[in-house]
Image (cartoon, rainbow, N blue to C red; front, top):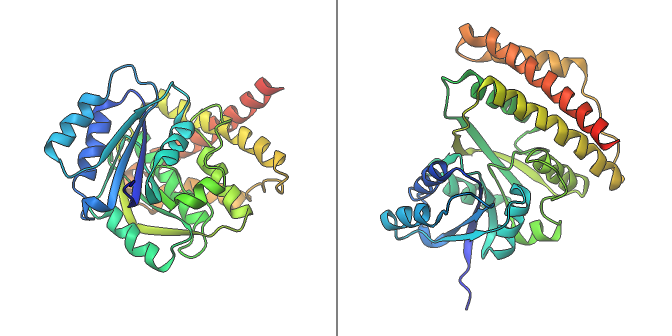
Amino acid sequence: MTQSFLFSVIIPTYNRPERLRQCLSALAEQTLAPQQFEIMVIDDGSDCPLEPVVAAVQAKAPQLIIRLSRQTNAGPAQARNAGAARAAGHYLVFTDDDCAPLPDWLEQFAAQLQGHPDCLMGGYTINALAQNPFSTASQLLIDYLYSYYNREAQASFFASNNFVLPRAAFLAKGGFDTSFPLAAGEDRELCDRLVQQGYPMRYAPQAQIRHYHSLTLRKFWRQHFNYGRGAYHFHQVRAQRQAAPVQVEPLSFYTRLLTYPFAQPDRLRAVSLSLLMFLSQVANVAGFFWERRRAA
């Protein structure tokens, strides 16, 4: 008889063994009883074997149930879908290999889901590299988008490194769209598709993870350029399912975006962070039109 769990934590990973080790070690500290969750690690064709990483964590935390599988490199969307197909949990919880959930992460999700069992629920992400201005600006952008698009009882977007939904609903809705060319935009498309179909989404900021996403100026530009490419593909996919055109945000959206860093405690860094937020939007627009020209 197949064992069942409350949660299946799905982690796509690619060429980041040390980050994966850190993520699994954090999951070993969960306050939720270990028999209530399994961990599905999907190796997306890494260059080095990950069995030693999993074995090392398992040796220190034998109570963890970790299942490692490997696929030919196909991107995180395909990896997440593969994990979901093999999962035995009632709920699927998605995170990334460069994230470290806080100890009560799963317990917080479990508590919130008691009152709202049939929804997609997203948690809060903490930038773990506060001294890195590029990582800080990137997370501030996500924080701003969450404050703009999400309310506790009415949400419309969550990043795929921290959300949960019933496995049956995820499979019935078709999972992540694997046609996206990059690891950018597939979470936005899934959330938009669920909203269009009337599926409820809720924000649960109590469920928190730390994100160790180290960025340089070049990586920052590439990240947001790729987000722009993903945005173009999102528009195309949305048109194919005959959804209403994406509404262009008002000028006030961008004004608030650029002033958002000034609401943070460190006012001395606000100017540089605001400039990086502006640069992220330039990169996004450049990526959008680059992808549109490439697809023409």
